[in-house]
Structures are given as structure tokens and as C-alpha cells.
Image 1 (cartoon, rainbow, N blue to C red):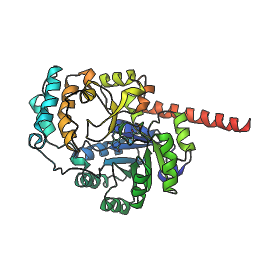
Image 2: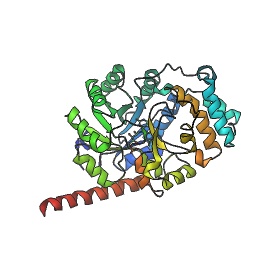
Image 3: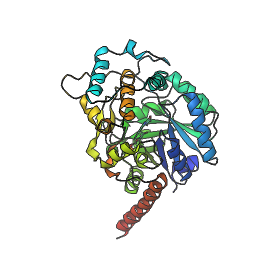
Image 4: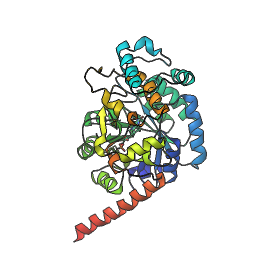
Length: 369
Ligand SMILES: Cc1cc2nc3c(=O)[nH]c(=O)nc-3n(C[C@H](O)[C@H](O)[C@H](O)COP(=O)(O)O)c2cc1C
């Protein structure tokens, strides 16, 4: 395939694979696309380990990093005592919910480990910059993408000075224009069917709007792409490639437990709901007893960023720890309804490209007939 994206990075296919799991990043990169490692959950030391490992398994091929840098964010320091900043009624609500469900507290060692970093610190400009400094030591990192806002000017300048391309996620035209004005090289137009933080505009409407708004800056289409017909639609609507997140969750390389994968494979597209209960900002995630408890009478309203992440981080760890399947949730988009069994990252690439080729042939025939 040949698009502005394959040309920019020397890829065989313009498929970008966002994942928090290094195995997916490696497999996607080796399959001819570009793996993108999400960094919101890791420290600089952990990032160094991850990048070393990715470098040693990708034979000089380019890959990318993703940082979430929200424009609107409360003050965060690397270590915060949650009891000092969280409203007691919110802490009580979560504790009672889990207690009633018979989900016990975490072992002390696990709680101590969680308390070592403030969820949300990596989402600050300072926390992000510490990661960039590590990333710049790894020459295969050819692209850094920022989500939830515009990356700070000094970050964009530093990356460009090191020959690294910069991208940004946008959920509407206004965000996209702001990113381009700040100097990004690529805009990722993410429709509301996507997993994790999303806006309110569907991919079908959003992609061509952003393509037109930022031309000639290239656009990657995100939100609801898991197969070749959707990749063909993305290119037909003017995108230069696809940026996918949810589809990799069902692969054998993904970070998910067997129970969580089972829940995803049983889910329909309607089970991927938009809630603010994980970070305080609207995210699409798998519906569960935990996500729905916040809609019950008497439940408190979610807190603003980063307080909500601080509030629920331990609760989600407790749920995982005892494999409380009904309470488990994970970010996932509407494409979950098409994910029925475990596959591999390489297979997703293979099937997507095959269906893409069949689709374009069918369309060419329809034009000739
Ligand atoms: C489990 C998961 C975690 C995500 N975390 C992030 C993140 O940390 N930063 C980010 O920019 N996007 C994140 N996203 C969104 C992806 O980058 C991507 O835009 C989205 O998954 C595309 O839509 P799709 O889920 O329909 O493929 C996440 C998506 C999923 C499914």
C-alpha cells in the first residue's frame, strides 16, 4: 500500500496499532504497520525497559509512543495521599460497593505499590516530559502522539529538533485546527465509537470534516476500525491510514486476562458505553456492575481529572485481584461487538489487508459495470 503515512515512515501498511502492551506494539511493527505504545501507566524507568525490549525485537523498524496530556487538569504531584484530597463520601461509596459485592481489600504490599505513583501524574506536562527524555534515547521512536489536548510547545519543538514527528488526537474540527496551529505533523481523527476518551461525533461524519479542515496535513482515521471494509472506508473518506486500539485487545499478545477477554468476546457493541467514572472525563468502556453502580440513586457524581482516576485505581485493582468478572471493565470501543474469539495481531493485519483488497476490487468492478 502507498499513502502519505507509508511514505512518511516507510511502512508496508498504513495501520497504526495503539496498545499499552509492548507485545502488540512489536507484532504490529513487524507485520508492516506501526506499533504505538501507550505510556499513561508507566514510569520513566519502566518506559526505558519497555523501549529497550521493543528495540531488541523490531530490527530497526520505526514505532511510536502515545502520551495523554489533557489541557484541563487539576494539580498533580508525583505522590499524593489520596485520603487527603478525595472527598470522604466518594471513598465511602466505592468501599461500600466493593464490600457489599464481597470484594476484599488488596494485600498491603499491593496497596503500597499502587501508592508509589499518583494515577494521573503521567498526564501532566512535567510527567510527560520525563517520558520524552527517555524516548529520545531510542532512535526507532519516530512518532510521538498526544491525546486530550495540544502537546506543550517545548515538547513539540524538542521532538522536531530530534527529527521525531508529532501527532495529536482530535474529536472535532476545533481540536484538529488547534493541533495544526501548534505544529503537529499528523492529526488522528477519532470518532465517538472508539475505546477510551472520546468526543461525540461519529467517525463517518468526523473523518472527512477533519480531513478538509486540516488539509494538507495528513489524517489518520480512528474509532471503529477493525476490518478491511472499515479501512477502505477510512481511506475513501480521505484519511491516509487507520489508527486502531480496541481490536488488539482480543489478540493473544494483549495485556488482558483470560476472564476479561471472555467478557469482551461475549459483549455486543451496545455494551461499550460512555461513562466518566474512570477518569472524570467521558470514556468508552465495557459496561459492568462497577460502571453501572455510579448511575444508581444516591451515587456521587464522578470527580474531575485526576481525582476520579485516583479514586477508582485501587478499586479496579481489587476487582482484578479476585477476578470479580461481573465488576471488571476495560476501555473498549463499539467494534467489540465484532470481536468473538482470540486471534493474533498478525492475523488481524492479514485479515484486514485481505478484506481491504477484496473491497477495493469490488468497488472497482462496480465502477466498471
Ligand atoms: C484499552 C484502550 C486504552 C486506550 N488508552 C489510550 C491512551 O492512553 N491514550 C490515547 O491517546 N488513546 C488511548 N486509547 C484510544 C486509542 O488511541 C484509539 O484512538 C482508539 O482505540 C481508536 O478506536 P477503536 O478503539 O475503535 O479502535 C485507548 C483505547 C483503548 C481501547
